[in-house]
Length: 170
Image 1 (tube, rainbow, N blue to C red):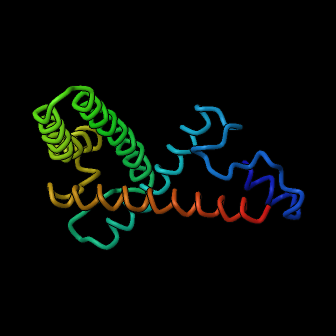
Image 2 (image 1 turned 45 degrees about the horizontal axis):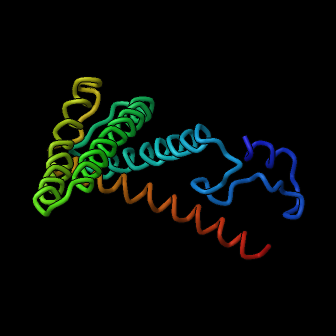
């Protein structure tokens, strides 16, 4: 919306409103719902781009249409959110306990969640999309997941860096 308004009503840098977020995670002017929305929207768009590049440069991978790639991005974002919540819950439980054995159980639990989640992703994609989406095997999905996370984090860091640069000038 901001992009549309700015594109159709050009303004100088001095006229930009102070309410434009310099850092989505730290801007108190944005509500929690707004931060979640922007995070999900950005990740889904990044995932869609990465998925389509993944399919374009790999002969064994298939996504039948652009619409299905967007829906796959939505599914992956939801799955990653569940996986991250489970990982944080297990690690939080382990950290709340005294003793090295609990920490070891926590590390193993997080590793197990991360390992098994690749199989869950494969099954969920197959269940939802059937033959319309083929992401490959375990190793392919692991590499895809890493690529999705790296791309998402890179976009987040550029965004934060741009906000820091704008704040340094004021």
